[in-house]
Image (tube, rainbow, N blue to C red; front, side):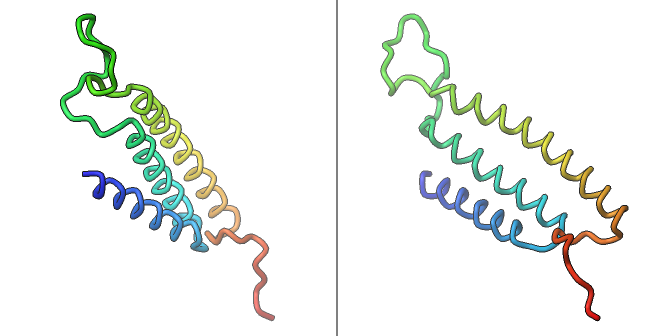
Length: 115
């Protein structure tokens, strides 16, 4: 399970970095989104992979790490998903406005035309 999770984080991070290095604005937005998914998966994995464990302690159970799942990474990932969605919507709106204004979707605005 840990190997599959590590491969997933690595694959998302690699694809995200590759898309970040592209010259088009849509690829850049997609790369930022995929990279944020990789970070979310990594943060979620830091809370230990626990199956069938409650995130809240019951009054009669001892407070050892083996009896419950850590709720903090779950809350951080939930917050990061909402922030990532808002960031993606904003970037898409900015990219569409730049495409309409410049009639080009390249990220490098200082690109010179050949003479």
